[in-house]
Length: 453
Image (tube, rainbow, N blue to C red; front, side, top):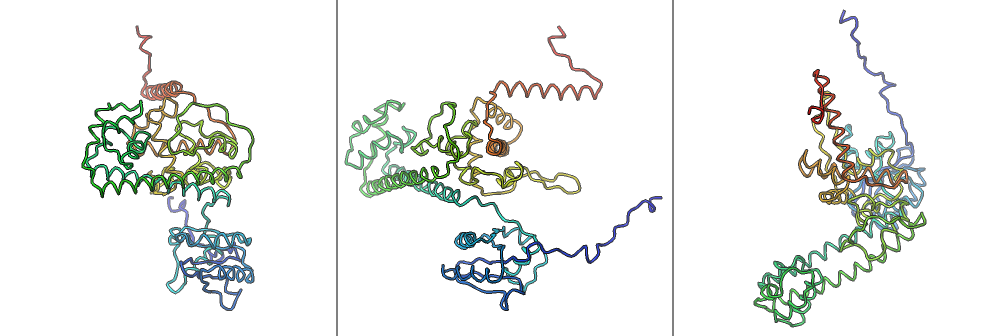
């Protein structure tokens, strides 16, 4: 009886096994630093594989050859930054350019050893086995490059602060032990006075701000050192570089503001929100209004999201998230969604994939800042920390922030915080409901303590 009801699986026929060509006019390009190898369909040219150097005139000749061969779709691997000039050139010439992940290409089996990389890319693209990576609009790419450049400048400026502290320590100047930040107002005044030639500890300590908790005597005591000339010279140069990078940051902020004004698609100003202190490294212009006029919603209304975090996310994705079909696609691109490693119907691992996404990094930092937030998101994050270890809780909270951002940008809805008490009450109701269901399954009944009296 079992044999009669068993289904016999038959091998697929030749017609069923055959792959269909979805992109007959596809080309593949193997990107290199000095030259690029390009492959077109074999019937388009007597020499279907050609090598072009990376000079601009050769890139134009490459585009002309693809046009002559009737190519309309191009697939290339993301090799360093060498692909960017060719990608932008081909895109401006009207080609559909797909930037594919090299890891995904290697996962497709069947490649022969005598097939060039460009031919393999062309063949896979012809059968529709490759998908392009997300790349925002050209104007957003320009904003993204500027914001990344600003981050590079901030890291360089932080390096100079470390060099200042090193020079002070080598002179046994223990200023960092009495004030929290030598790059702040008091620290900068004292350092500039030292470079100018002042050595009296009492005179230097008198430059402190009224908000500094350390006393004048403690600061003067920390400023007693050996004042060696070589360390003073290193301190002077680090301070000069700190000021120079600061001027570059101001110039970069002006350029960011100009690009944001070109991306404005909405009018008006954001509604007044929670009063928050401005981050020290935030741009000096009204970034919140600029972001609202670009996105149409105020992302800073989400607890944990400040103007720098919002711009870090928007500069990577843009305000138009229509490229992502659902919020799950968006969180998967960010690398914040749980993994789906399932074998035999059993979940083997739910670990998120490793991803160097800058927007995800900004959201993780924002999620970690929810630890002391008296809001619904803050209560949610603290509840996660009680259930799991801190890194997993940060990733889960960042995933929730990403979903809120996607909803706001796609639906144009504003976020309203219900408060910590609202979240705790809902959590209590859910817990009681689940406990009542478990008690009912065991033939028991939950009775509140006040009804027993």
